[in-house]
Image (cartoon, rainbow, N blue to C red; front, side, top):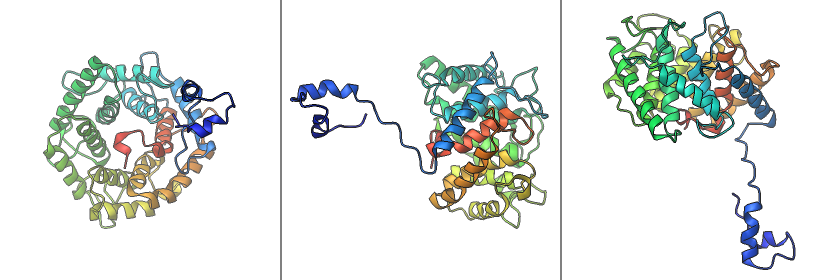
Length: 356
């Protein structure tokens, strides 16, 4: 609550004549609304509120979000990403307007943990299960410190520990990961998903063997191309802008802000990722690219962020559908809306993994 001086309160009326009267008045003074972060406008807030309402309305009765695009439903991935988007709004499993949805989402993800540690739903479309597994570790780790129920905290910790073990066992000899734990292969987009999940788990106090992350970072180094970007996988040629942006985030999450590879890769991303979609050569993965590009620019510092955020903010505001959603990369509206919200809400700095 804003501190109010005696002189200021005296203007409420001449009848306020003693300190005891002032003390009685103070609780009735409404706290001022929180200041907007820089570059977050009233129009931005309205856009965010509309998207949150849409996303909250799409949760199934079992707590999951299921995508409606041509790629399939992917309930674990969509639930983890949607949970992150609602958490970024300031709600927790016990507080805030989206607390009920977050409690149900948390229950769904915890119940999705398999005996081997894989966070996946058997019998539903999760053909690329390590995506959902990585996003789920990220969601659980981010929400772990916000949980107030001790029993539920222990459940989250157990799921994260088992999840970290599964990720470690699934790592390829080159240091990366492929779509499922038993594929014994690797590629960049799955790899960065595991790295960020592992980083978040480690930040939450979960034991993560150092060599797992070190080998994963070496995998990204082996994928670096001559232009500074990152290839789809080790041994391939040609940089992929979305994966390159994700790699920058991995370096920055590790605190390697001055790593020449990270800086060269960021330079490549700045020249390859804009806000006009396919015109900017990001392989049709606009929302995926900007999910990571926004984090990279935010973590890079004020200069990069101040030049980037107004452009992506205005693009998302003007491209938002009437119902509050975005159709993300033809993957679906749940996916697009969750990522759009994560991008727009970055200035609030409510997710630990995405803080400077």
